[in-house]
Image (cartoon, rainbow, N blue to C red):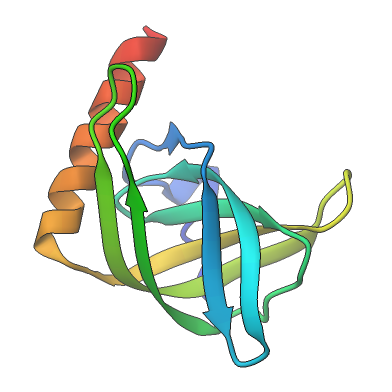
Length: 119
């Protein structure tokens, strides 16, 4: 099983991102709330559980706002963690297996802008 989100194994800085995301599953669309993003993956909250090691194609756009650049994410990702949340629903982490080069540039710019804002 993948475990890329363990603190001791994290290779890339992550940044908070509070946006809605729809993930298309065999059972239909699942609405999620993004929590953070890095070059390695994303974390989000969902009312639906996801099976660990499930694969998904992601295509997500976030418009620029305030001091943050826009973000277009095209990636293939695997679920590495799905745990019940204290507030109900599930906290889910996905590890990117493949990310389009332009999306990596967008992620880098977004994370750098967020980290600069928090300093």
